Image (cartoon, rainbow, N blue to C red; front, side):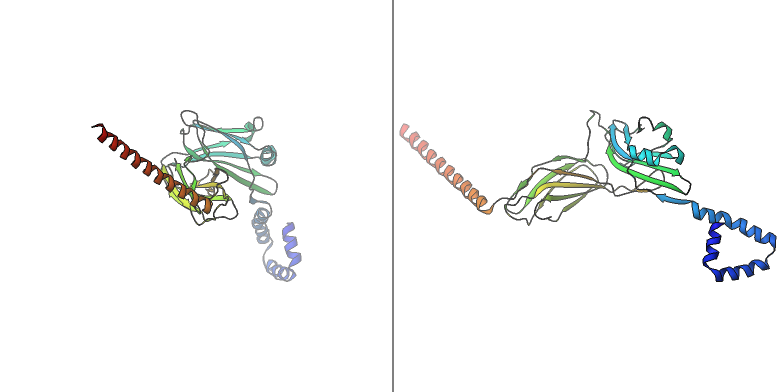
Length: 304
């Protein structure tokens, strides 16, 4: 009843009008009113559902048909204490169509010793959203949370993959442009953003969309000559809508990886010199070939 007392003490005019209304009611009616609103007051005071953005996943070890998930020590201590009556959900949601997800409900007493939870029965060489979710209850509120990542199961030979980009081809440059080629093995809708990182400026990125394995070729133009632009970085964003075990939307997960080092555009003077040298070598080779042809023809005529 303390919330009512605070409410009445801070609103004297409302108390006066309320007392007049209550005086007109009989004793049983007043008692029924108090009994009916008391649970609402307590629920509003105590039962708050809070989302905690904690990091639950410390490391994930993929297998051919599943994942072994190792949890953070701090997460176990703060969110899975036995006094909080916690519950953990582990889900593996496939990015490939027409593939069923895997959902497990885990009691924390099986986690405290080895700090590990596992999911099995998945397809080999396939990408999944792996989500660890939890619920717990304290005296004053209910806490929920979620931590999701992207991982791929091992292929049949046991090879591990951290990105859908299997190959980055020749990265070449001229005076003001960087050329590149890469191959992605994604079998799901994917947005790929290619950019240069680590240079004196951030040139506009290039964006590709794909939903099948493909080879992408592109170039980043309008750069300064003879300038180090750092690394070629690729950001992969799956465009597959999904829901976790507790009904939360899985979104915003990406894979980021950079390739090569010290990508430098060419110097104009040096490039011009090399072009002239190449033209000279071509002309010289042509002249020598013509001279040899004349000598061979003359020798053939003299032999007759």
